[in-house]
Length: 330
Image: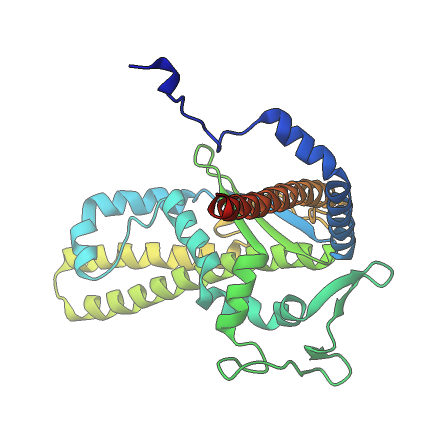
């Protein structure tokens, strides 16, 4: 076999780093201008975003007092009888009651009953905060402060005044944050808003609301149990059952009394919320850095695409001329 006839394969698609560097160097002006323009846009966007502030409270599940221990003893003695009557004399553990309270905080029903009327305007219409007056600045295209009416333009699927469902979705997605430490059981409730004082007030409103909600639920259950037990006690003639019903009624009465006497029924505030002095967002430095990096990357890609597109065009033209010349040559 003739070695001269052996052809070595060529790889036209291999990237020559030196050529790549030269291409980028030739397009350095476009890269610099593109990066500078992107940086300018990023800085403008970062400066135009209003500050937001986050206020938070550290909560501890409240331990039940002596009534809980007595109810536990009754549960071991009369738990079967009470369960037949639909009464949970053992009650929930502190962790179980706290878990229910946390899920209640996120629920639409809790929001509609305890928060909706208090937070609606600042939640759906605020666009920034006036430090001098310590008040939220409302968007006039959404809410008319003079007439206290909603004037926003919405589609047919929404109401002019935001519904509980719409407001709850916005509240959970943009404002509310709940974190639970699985080891200690401590719960952190945080609110993010344009106004530091509004964020603090909402945290207090949430904590007080969930304590009141769980208290009201337990009192209602205890009162229903008392009414049922009284009815059953009147129907029975057995002295032993009458004594059992009396003890159960006594413990349910204690539940009602303790609930009425305790303000921090489910959660005890360990670290109360304050109006924060420093903003939590936006991170303007991060926005500017990402803008510069993105602008530089897009500029490099543009320069490379432009160069190789021109190179392919020139190569196609030269190949066409070569073929035409070969055809015309004798």
